Image 1 (cartoon, rainbow, N blue to C red):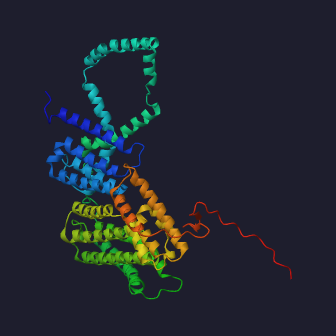
Image 2: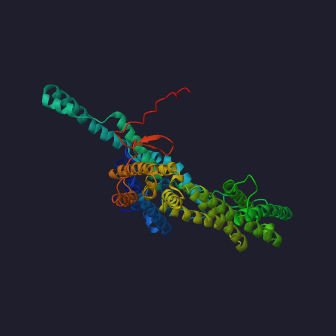
Length: 514
């Protein structure tokens, strides 16, 4: 008798759960553009994990990870993006592994998740081999012997009746077997989904025994001499003081730059290299300020480290100001928002490194604190549309409408739809209004096509389309240009009136001779 909760029942439940996910993925994704369906599949995957894994339901840490996975699944329903999917996968796999192994630090945990995904690719084949081995060979022979006569005999009689009876022959002729190539593609698709979901339902337990010694443990690293640390920190502080003094003089105070150097060039060139400098400085502080090292016990070294960290924080602040100045001089993009967030994470990491040195915290605490800060920032990024934020800022802060980079707004697609509608109302002149109207039509047409198909429908897209229709309907479309042609964002001439012929070239006329 099979008992609920027994290993046999648990395996069968996971098998049926995986089959349900494969069928759902085939309905949602096969030959279809994904939309909210990506979030729907993510929520179904989390539900199957909770149903088929009682240990996940009974472990408090696993339940927290599962709730986080559900939140990212809702974000995928709202607006599916690769970052949301990656964070959902991390949360879901954490929920799968936490009942089997206690969390230690983020680096080791991420490595276990990665290895479980890699080695888990072989888990379905291993389980299939075990099923074949457990199935008695005598039972297979008995069943085959029982079926061979009725199957072959029935096929023979059906063939003879089909030759003798045209009705039976017509019924067989009406049967349409699926295309062999389509069956192969479906089978490959089902196998990919199985390889993706099975490691979460049945983790590779050998991976959980790996400790990855030395990844986050620096206790056995060689200590640097105190004298070398003091000389290095004095040298580094002096060099950083020169850079920070120049930033204070020209960047923060707004003093005139030397001839040949523009404010935009000064702001743009130093933003990202200085962040690399701060990262290298943080790595050096980690090495020099280990709680068990002689340098951490030296009061002079600790003061020099604190001074250097303070200079690095000023350097990060200068990098952020450089980026903001460059944005004010040019435009805001999603990547520049991400760069500002990254600079904030670098500053947070430097503060955490200093706090760890002062309080004597462990390396695992430092790693987990930085991972938590990065996770909160990434979760916030998943909840918003950086492209829409950048487009709205550019439209609201543009001094002149024709100074906007319309090619960038066009590349954002539906994310720039609402800011483009606002820009059309403010546009002066028929040329700019016609170009913006063309971009609105393109973005709205693409959004409407996505929303008409239930596979590619998204919650955010529905809200955006409703807001765009409410803003567009009260305003009539601008009249097209007289010749029916406008200049596209890349200089390409685009016809906005279907029946308007292209402008004819002006005839060549000879000037009269004097």
